[in-house]
Image (tube, rainbow, N blue to C red):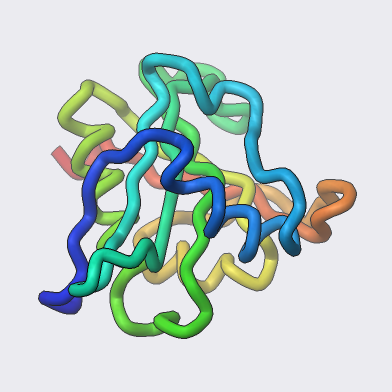
Length: 151
């Protein structure tokens, strides 16, 4: 992780602009559950305080591991294209996984854009579905990372 990147928990209004720009082509970026008190929004900030990455984590049943005791969903992950590859995404995921584990979560799952699956695999996630389409966003795969085995 770049020493210039700081990850912090933030209110939802901090993550929406980057989420909109990167994931929704400037369109609405709010999703159901954003305001739920159990939902956590993280932002990676550069040395000058600019938000360069965001992610949302929330307790949610995992469609591929229905027996999971305490699953969380990773959603709305976005990194400013100008800083991709510099560690902001990695810092967000690492911080998010630690936060979930600290709150008793036993796994983290996501619907990853097909183009981002390699990033999540490098972060320890496993692809558990074939490709499926989320309209109007495009092709995704289901992925998860088991936290119980890591404890």
